[in-house]
Length: 559
Image (cartoon, rainbow, N blue to C red; front, side, top):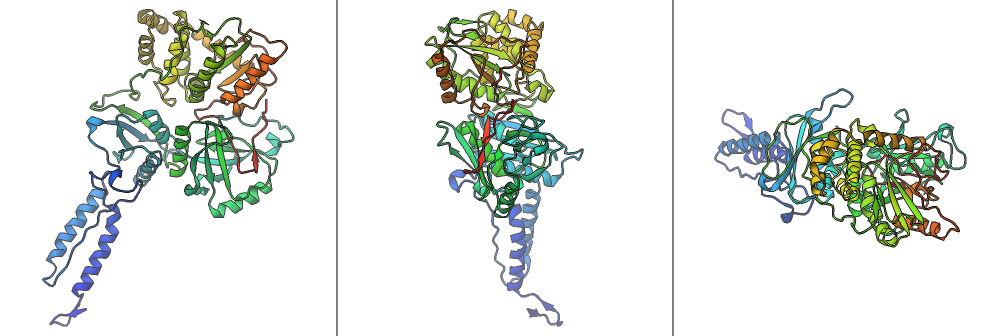
């Protein structure tokens, strides 16, 4: 301390400097990263901090004025829009604008907006998206910019999920146990969970450091997501699971069932896995969502603008232009309407699907492709497609049945399979307008249809009644979701494995080896369901099972 001539005690220069440093330290976290920063110059995901340094000499307090000005500028800038990443010019970027939705009637608040920006930044970083930016716009708007070459469907999946994960016990009085059937069926993958059931654990109980996407060594060619609970919750999980052996529980993401396994024994260690038909990209996307945590508010995509585009008023979000499928069904394979393959093929695979269902899309673009090469082309198998509208019932739209109507119109012109290829390739995560009239007409043009005739039939809803009737027949038959796959009218393996090529090919081989096989596909009628039908459920998420290391077993089909 120093004493003035008047006897007043004042701080020394060193004390003043220490005080200034303390104030600057409190401001530093609010200072945004420089616009020129990129992951190339620092570790991915590393915190970025701008440090203000100043030296105070013995000439008085004048330098503090400059420091104070810097602090004011830093605070003012930091409390404005929050931007993360090293995004470049808009001329080279695609811009996605999201709006935060109210929760329980309560509008978003600024702190929730800041949390949203942070979580989205963590998700995109974990997913490996390069050179992105996340900016808070108005109090309820977030703007995400990614380089033009980035896969938008993957980005939208990472961003669009609220990420609220729950672990919910299914009461044995209603759902039974692994040994005894209950009065209610165990929820299928993708089904909406009963809102009256309470969660025993949530995503907040997970340890993000224990979440990762890894190759599935059991299901060759697929990936899975491993996760772990925090140390405190791991002991609670062990005690809870030990008290509910043989009972079912559901693992739920944003209200949709990821899996409903039963507890085989007390789950020690607090770890588990989500496995099934995940691709590497799909597993990484879900892992990124789980690592980043749950968003405080659901997000709704309002617009997508390509490089150089400007926003135009619209009642529905802009969507990317139609892209060609990475692979197309060969035109030299015999086909008739919605059936592909020789009419006298000894085995029939019936595919009941919904063009908005991304699980169906995964089956059509992966497993079905392999089946066409190895079985359809060789005359052993024919594939028949059936409409089973599920997603429209979930989101209140009409894109699914309009796409199904359009595909039947394409079949009238002998172009069903190429048109379907385009539909699967242009799914937009169940967004409104993904199969709007304009987009369906553009798909018709790219598929080589007579566009004028197609448009007239589409506007007339030529086959809508047939689409609805066939979908109703699927419900009457007892099918519980999409996709539903039948081999010669039945299926003798768990629905959780239905997308795997090795499982389906084994069922086809078994049917081929049977003493007698039926060549006719099961008709879309109101007849009773086969006793062994299985399905993956109405889900925008890949079919999945969850199993902890040697403690949790997959559920038995409840059909």
